[in-house]
Amino acid sequence: MTATLYAALVDDAGLFPPTSLHMEQALARNRRDLESGNPVLTHRFLCPAGRLDRLRDQDFRPARIGLILDPEEDVPDFGDLPIDLVETPLQEGETVEALAARLQLPKGVRLFAEIQPRKLAIDVPEGTGLKVRCGGLTADAFPAVEPLAAFIRSCVDHEVPFKATAGLHHAVRHFDPSLGVDRYGFLNLLLAVCEAVQGRDPAHALRMTDVGQLVRMARAVPEEIAVRARRLLVSYGSCATHTPVEDLRTLGLIEEDQ
Image 1 (cartoon, rainbow, N blue to C red):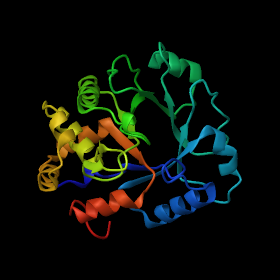
Image 2: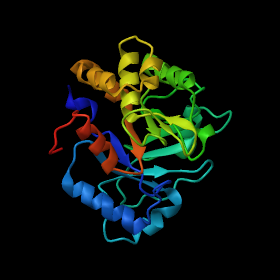
Image 3: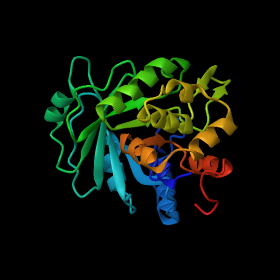
């Protein structure tokens, strides 16, 4: 097994549903996570542009901030905030190149354009990436396996980095009776990228619910495949930062002291 697969995997989305912490609570958790130094966490704090002023009012500043922009929202003044990426939906008819030109982000700040899984990863300028939504608050927010698998294959084929968000609450795919839908697991997503990197169909890994088989697959990922897969799958946002760590520990994929 390789720690590379899980290193700096989880962004802190505590401000977002369903957790929806208050700013003070979210920053206090982010501070505790930062002090714990768990290698699975990026310690990047995802914050909507409209709440940056509230963040500035707090005594604690996260080590890294991911800025979430609404469509057509102007880029705010970053000031001294440690913003290292911006995520925003790609509007209908707009290219990623045009979006990057419109936003004019400061040097060193990466853009991730959110698209629907049915759209494929083409014409993405160097230094930018894509973002895919794997679920949400309603059943129709969860993409079907085939479009998500096609998105992953396209990102791998074109060497396009991407981020994921929403719905990835646990490591393994499982049925959510409250929504009547299967939730994707973040381990399923990771292994789907690994499968695509090796020229195999990622759909099988996305569908898998056999915990033992998933763990065996994860332990068998070669280091060089893990490195390439994680260069493509940059991270994913989770409203709970402790759950991914606990799941990986329970599955025996990271050490107990991590």
